[in-house]
Length: 437
Image (cartoon, rainbow, N blue to C red; front, side, top):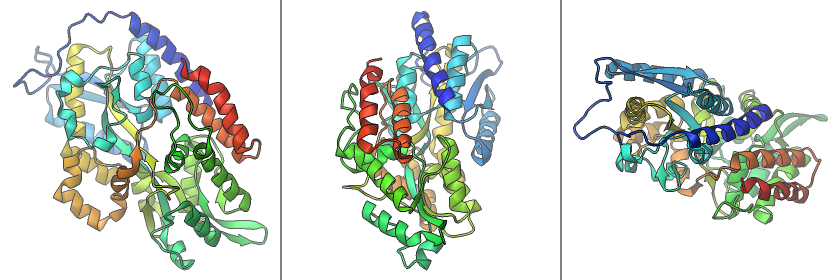
């Protein structure tokens, strides 16, 4: 994954220079004209647009089904979907394609990277197309949709991190199956859930990938932030920034938390598999993993808010849909029609029920259909409720590179190669230069 991060940064620079040099004088439609229902090419032929997505497995198949349904109901537009790997891989491929002049027209962009793409002038301003229709989306999901007061992205597969618990193991240990509510309770539960056979740990109480997303959550829970309000300075060289590292390293040292091996999504996969195999009783992962974990677990899966520090807190995550700036006007118009449909209430309800990701619109959450489902499947509602305490991820262009530095230093601390103070100091040493880019 370090290779993909390096590729991303190099491509971003080349794309920024390329797009900045392109003429911006081409006329823009500003969306469909009043009363116009579709984005047809005007010559009787359907407009073809390429859609690159970044979810595999069952979620990828569901996306393909949704695209097929769109094509069947929109005869003047043909969407051609293509899976491009995970977020990191898709981002790098999109930037490379922009440079080569064969970019897609619509793609998924991880929420925290929208600002990076927009700042490189790779994305189309969606404001003239939306005409304030974006107010239908859940406000808590819109923090990563704007860059410099312009709308560049629409929520699609959005999430927050959740605590997942093996309710059977919690009950066996005499613990509340609803899960721990605070950091102190997380430690207490983890101690009681950890099982050893001689010197070997049979079951760990807790595990989490050492990922920037979860670190952000724990910083927020201590009243901190990752960057200053203007995004120009690092803001974690304090107790709020060091507390997550101290918590995790102390739990690993005590033997009640497993640090899953591997980098980025490889570590996520290990943590989820350990949970399903009963080798870990509690994990942090995305609400987007709910469907897969519930379907594959041989035990009762529960979800809960991330345990609170001084308060509850979580970043939003997942990906938004964007339109590429270098597409033709006809393709942009068709792309906006496709995004509208994919994120509209009927489709976002269908998507949420199939995947576990949150619905995108307020109307969807408040609908009788979803309210009835939430009563039957309370795990599905936890992420929506946690939005009360959620914050948008940092979006300044340098944060993409900075988060790689933070994760590397977190891992050094977890492996005992640096103290929390040393890890944060190492981040701060590099942060000033990165954030000036």
